[in-house]
Length: 150
Length: 176
Image: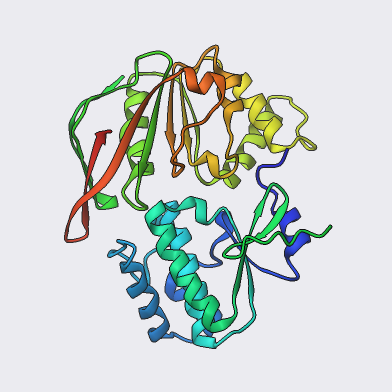
């Protein structure tokens, strides 16, 4: 029985999905660095958007240069989602399929609801679809449809 | 080991806990479930209040943290050094081996382990004979349903944000 099967996850879904995985949320160590890597510039508007949205999750202490390791596990999961969603909106990326793995169950009920509301907005405006794995089934969140390959 | 009601300040984590109940981790067949919002200090309370108190009281404990990736690497190395052949061993078996050889422990701490195993009743089955007290951080609303888990006296502990003093979060910790 595997608890943590990153290789399996990438092999199965890596080509079709952008995977948000709890144990691999970021490449770098801060929001500013992460934005640099994606935007190749110090995109202050994007950083500001993430910080402002984080405040809606009672995260008033978020700072562009604060080390991710100083946030709680749930807060890191929220920041990773906000970063991803902010990038999608800034770049006007359409038709993306996101697979979340141990993200939504790392946050409180209240914060999960808030996150889902933002995902729902981006789904509507950018045709972004959100998936999760459950007992080896690939489930689309919002529709509940099972997309497992038969 | 008792964590008395008191105020506990974690300066470098910007947290001030107002613990309004005594927490007794000496009792047998008990389970404390910690719940609360993200960033309200559940893990910090474990690592900076409870675990130092356990160390001071010289009480053996097992702790599975949220970052299971690092822990599994460490576990694999530890078991290899002890002579176990673990190269082909899956994580479930690694945990079972580790738990099996940790029978001096009396407290088991699980920090959001349920995100890896929504039903983690096997942990209670493995440890029923020696663990007296479980401390579980969870976002699940329901407690585990296994026979051993259900036989434990459950104490539900809530972490709630009272206010912000600058960057310092004042968090009340209370029994529900």
